[in-house]
Image (cartoon, rainbow, N blue to C red; front, top):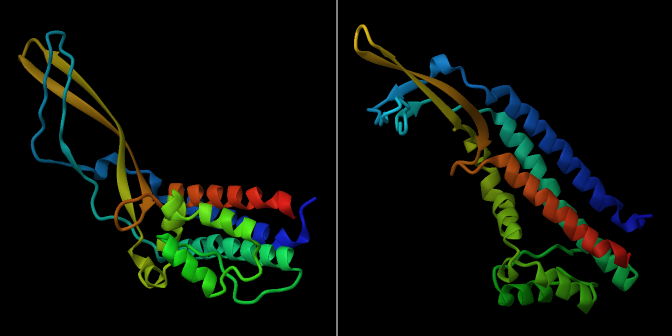
Length: 231
């Protein structure tokens, strides 16, 4: 049975899952693209072999203006907040476990180098946490390979939250099926293309939102489970 000290941590992770599910539902509502609205731009390069099969085609597809919805930004903010808070709750629980009393002002540090980590410890972010647990937290830091923490820090930066309206859908071409037909009477060849495209909610740099959030949730859950046996 889980220690009550970890209840708040797992509750935050549960809320994270709920917000990610909401984002997934929002994405489903805009995923499908009407092929009739897709414009083919530029010239296509087609190589038809001796059997009459198309080997290469490289057109440029215009899907129109990206879709944007402020609700995506709001759900992203809720998700990131709970992801970050779950780690802070973990440190609070560790400090209480190790010291036997509540320690205020604690926080899960995310540092880019050992010097920053030492400064965080001196500032009291890990006040009450024993050396073994401090070492385990340091082992998770970005400079020790914990790149997911670096991603989380970037998302939880307050400046990012001021610009969440920049989250927008991007377009992804999944498959392209091409068929050709030759009319012997007119000596003409026609080509038919079938598009299977979808949209996904993305950050301004086109990084898909939901896969990144799923990864962060998994990493944080694994981190909490790593410490859970000590409680």
